[in-house]
Length: 297
Ligand SMILES: [Zn+2]
Image (tube, rainbow, N blue to C red; front, side):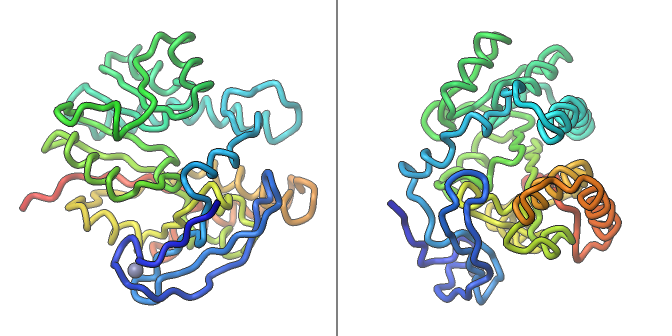
């Protein structure tokens, strides 16, 4: 079952234009559309699967990040990138957090939290997938809840909250953002990693761009729309960091969706080009990390 959004989640405007017609290249091959708000430009999947039926689009072993048994260049590169990413994520937390309590929403199989705890942080995770959550609990003995809205006490406080490529999947966006600002310490930081639908590789691949990931991604932020969205919740962006490896990974997958094969050389060229063009602040990188603080009023 699908649901149709009639009010822009950022500005409440009620008129949208078609931005792109694509499909679920990853799993079901079903068609989906992305619309853009005619007032603020926010792009979102519309109509989209409702929260219950959305689960069926995650029913693939390949979507689970701890599945390292698959062969081929993409899973190998993914594994290498993941190890690199875990350390670079910790370095970002260490640089910006002003205390030692960390909440990671969408912690998956827990590798990032496991490293953070080894470095001395007090860690809590949230992971809706039972399989990934059980893995994180059993393998690393991490404290992982199933649901942010119901399982995290409103009186909890965290110095740092991280969401690595999670926000673009969340149906209850407004409730989630309200609760995030409630459980964030007044001097806390919120770290949000997102694909950027204005990036060079997004424009180049169009409907084949793998980070549209329809219908699992229901919002398709740009720098402009994300900063506008964050300010609605009194959050201000202090810096934006690139995730340069993502340009290559996303280009490899996009080549595969467009042509049926990974076209390694072409994907590497496209990734390099995207990272060069990403230096233009109006374009930005394929994937970016926003460091946010609560505005002092
Ligand atoms: Zn709008």
